[in-house]
Amino acid sequence: MTSAPVSASGSWPVIRSLGLTGLLVSFADAFSEPANRAALAFRAALERDPWPGVEETAPSLVSVFLRIDPLAADHADLAARLSDLVSRQDWYEAPLPEGRRLFRVPTVYGTDLAPELSEAATAAGLSEAEAIRELSAARLRVMALGFAPGQPYLGELPENWNLPRRTELNPMVPAGAMIQAIRQCVLFSRPSPTGWRHIGQTAFENFRPDSDPAFPLNPGDEVQFVATDRAHVERMMGDADVLDGGAEVEVIS
Image (cartoon, rainbow, N blue to C red; front, top):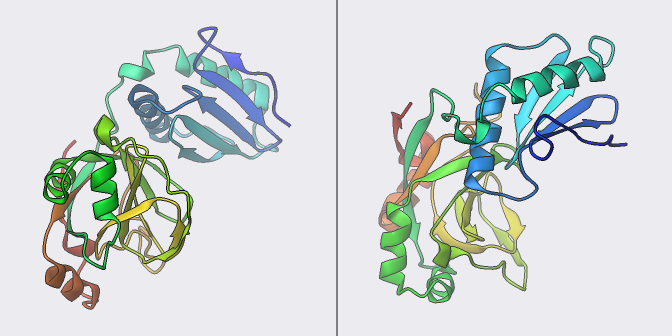
């Protein structure tokens, strides 16, 4: 059961109670860059000063979820604290979290490893070569992790990449696949079916259950899919000693 929203400003953001063990702070009802920025910054503020009774926080594209222990915290008290925190600043203009990193990931575009590049390029009004140049130059923010463990939603691409999902499901794409739709890219953690177009292939592993941390990418990080040749990616796929799919990694904040 979801309660009526409580809003510090009369509109957005809103604070909702989700059942007995959750609270949700939402900064919009649809994706936008400012709403994503607000969600990331607000979650970072909560993580800097953990509250008693809050067991976990997790950002989505435009919201932050708080998982709470109902025996150690009161919904109304936490909602009041959240409302106070919301009112302290303009979260839509807040700086992104500190400690963010840029991953430059070697990516092979097209070929039979990523066979839907041509279709996507045509839909975006570009030649394959133009599409590769544009995609390679883009620095995409990890806006949220979801659908599969550690799997990033990355954006945004220019408006010409606001492509709808395919009408037919691709029955399976491999781990490390870079897929595209609606001005976003997703880097697959595991083999999976998808309605998005498979336009690039990497050797990047974004779910490492035997490592700490298990997820190399965090919301707020950035990824650049740098074009390389097929042989380079295939060599890294077969080398267990290659970390981060051969990515160059630098701290950007």
